[in-house]
Length: 257
Ligand code: NAI
Image (tube, rainbow, N blue to C red; front, side, top):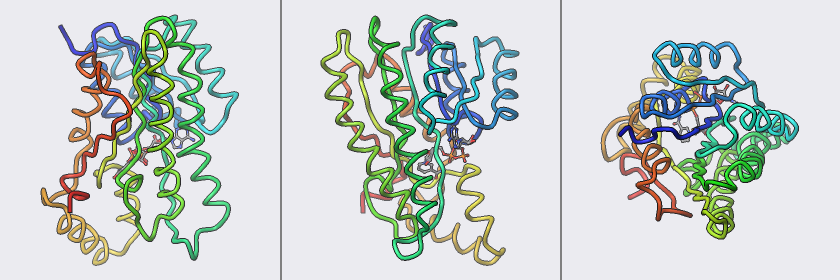
């Protein structure tokens, strides 16, 4: 039987990068997939492509930083499916800036999307997991475990996600049936987010940035989105029934050093 057969899986930030890979993998694994994103054009296109391949899909326009948007999205999921089994809080933004030069606006926007968005998502999902239990997967980062000097706000938000996940896991463990809550911590993944930041550099600097990442990564390359999918599939499936409050680092060995 496919690993996620009959599960209702919702992915935020589903229109691009990791979220698109998780959505595709969930559909291939037999789940009904709810794709949520602020990018309606790309999100709807992926939703239709997965439906054309036979999956049960729904696209929802959702800004994860807005509380009312979550209420509306969850009401729609409840109307359509009556419950939610898996929520992947994946939507995120990366605004560069060190502690010395990060603007207050960038700091607040980063916390709004990357941390408050995860808080709102976890809180909104719990009522829909009351009857059947569930799995919440929060996409943090290696920068939720270690510091990066040029991404102060991003580190603060992703570090917040790491411990919010543990707190939520302790709550979820008391639910009956339990709601498991875990975080995934990717290293550098070739998605539009990373390619944008490398691409913003001139050709020489971009090549140097890529070579630097490859050089510091023990497995010697950037990840592809599909390299992160295995952790998602495990945590979403019933094989992970005893895993909660855990941090899954998927970084090619970067933070093992
Ligand atoms: P991406 O930029 O390719 O995709 C992010 C998606 O989130 C986009 O579709 C975007 O429209 C959506 N989004 C942005 N703000 C949103 C909002 N307020 N509400 C709803 N959707 C919103 O980025 P990528 O790389 O796929 O990132 C996905 C997650 O993985 C993020 O949380 C990111 O921080 C995390 N991550 C990425 C790494 C990487 O190297 N690419 C490494 C570690 C973590």
